Image (cartoon, rainbow, N blue to C red):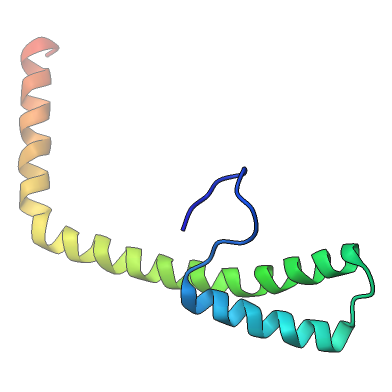
Amino acid sequence: MKHGLAGHGVCLPEDLEAERQAKLAAYIAELQPTDEVERDLVEQMATAAVRPKHCVEREGALILRISARAQLAWEEDRRAEVEERAARLARDP
């Protein structure tokens, strides 16, 4: 799914790629690009239109994961923090 700057074309999850293709078809029908530059711009528009949705969905999933982990591992994290501080205290009171 990730191809970096050297990759060719757009790389999106399947559901977003389908949404991008639908958006691209609608933009082409409406804007009727006449040359390669216009076509490139319309493709960029379609991609830019679907990416924010993907970001919002991923952000929501990340927040849920972090929240669930915080609830499950709160005491472990505090214990590790206390142990780390205690180890530093012995070296640097």
